[in-house]
Image (cartoon, rainbow, N blue to C red; front, side):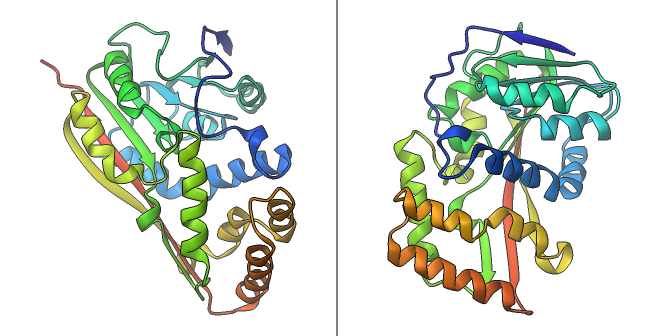
Length: 283
């Protein structure tokens, strides 16, 4: 495996930093691993339907600790995968995660705004839960357009907070807290409502045949354990309170709801994520 560096700055503007989360770094890495593996069976099927094939030259844009990169190399043998990320610490984890990969893997420390590869280079680019953290998504889409070969495919997998899903029994403060966390992310340059804008971003960057699909994850199909792992625990709630991300009222309400939800045998969780695809015209 190759590991490259570029002029990408560790301090470039973005709304996600694993060391800036209101709990321990190790817990955030565990959350990212759960997030990557929980939906992978459905995600893999969608990526195949959207055009990902064996042997392609693939860019994992914002690869982070490499959990999705590893799954891509395992389930799409023969792909030549490049992972890029701004965070050098996450890339070190990715290097260990991918050390046994049989595919040729290159990890590059760089910004998605200036991808250090020539034009018309990649067959497929995948950006998973990255665009919600990018302050200038149009610039990134234009750069992806440049590095894709004619006929190449760009898939953005992300969310829109307004249609992210539902939970039953519901939490009375859910909407209030969702808006609170969305506002905090927006202040760092992110956008948890980016899902509704993805097709427009692709069109304006020059992509054709744009389309949108979705992944629907329901607890009656997948079980509740994976959802619970993603949602966090009481320790995380207490940490959020100590660091003043939550008021005492909000933290107490969350703790009470945590107990109610976990003890309810009829609980339901539905999560919806969005996949937007664009194709670089061949002419």
